[in-house]
Length: 515
Image 1 (tube, one colour):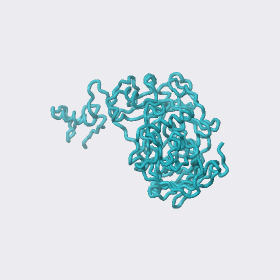
Image 2 (cartoon, rainbow, N blue to C red):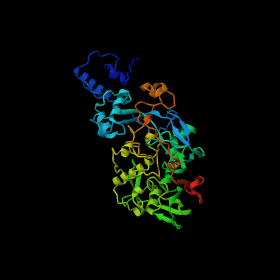
Image 3 (cartoon, rainbow, N blue to C red):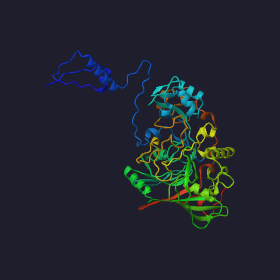
Image 4 (tube, one colour):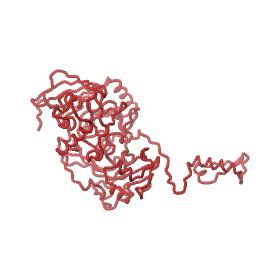
């Protein structure tokens, strides 16, 4: 019986090939031509041979966008409650990304200087000394290193999250197919921008043991009400088909400024997304077809409660249409702002460019010390980066079939799942956009020097000040109750064979008066 020797591909890369004849005899000598062929095969298997001084870049790893958040992510930090607010203890976190095409050939310093301006160059130099910036999992020791295709970058930061309402997240239905919750105002649905643990997805995972959920639709951060998740891929596809075929009915209730007409009002103005990153829209002939039906429910002499039926699913559709009609939602921080002009864009009359409008919005909220309500990227607020028009015909809508970003870890199963964190509103607001791994909070004994090992092994969830973190040096006032709510509530979600609803919010009652 013949003996055959098997070698792995790795073995063949590390040692000279052992060649046997079909009779099992070793060939100790090879011809020059055979040696050349073997060399070429080895080069093909192992990749291009490096020249002296050339830096090796490993090939990119495949990602699975359907992987959900796990207990490892939920354990990054903990919640605590204070003055009616849900707060998150600051924690260490890794922002990661592969080298973008436009970065190839540039130094890491140039990329930080041009695209990651939330922190100063001095901060990044100090972060390098601390071992917090890595390239292909190797600590960077020189920011002048030139980036190459497929370079994998990791930046470990000390992360702070804004407080949200401390109201409980109530699960209305959990029948094995769907999970339906009554979302409090101020909570984002999934991780975005500065929010990660203070989101519906993380609270359900950390406190209710619910993970691997598929988002069917979403609600804006300041909007409260019915929020639906599918438990399985099959149910998600079924509900997604219903959404696309307009078989699902959504009913909202809101409180608007002024006396809304008693008759039914239908608004069909097209809506254009000005910027996903900044997060606002306007009525524009170039926008997408939109249709909303409004019916007044009550009027208290100053404000009206209005029933809203969005028949299409455009970004901020209800809010934009009410603004166009001259009845903006009473405390809408964007579309109720005086920055739109004396008539607040009634009839679509604005008279400003997108850039001018953004500047006016920032100025208006700066004067009121309420910039946090806009959820703007740090670079935009500081003036280091202007507004860019990001609308396109294929842009994802926010109130129709919405699948959470792949990088959020929420199960994603639809071809419309194209919006990643870097393409959305979070772009530019953190050191690296895509978050694919996490680091646990460092122990309080390591306040002065945070080693790489402490990022991942320390278990303490208590507040730890970090000597490089700018946020640790700032004392921010807590948001007020009015900062955490917008008078827009998702009241009912109805399909061919199901209906989910919540109670009317207090502010929607007929005799309610604003404080």
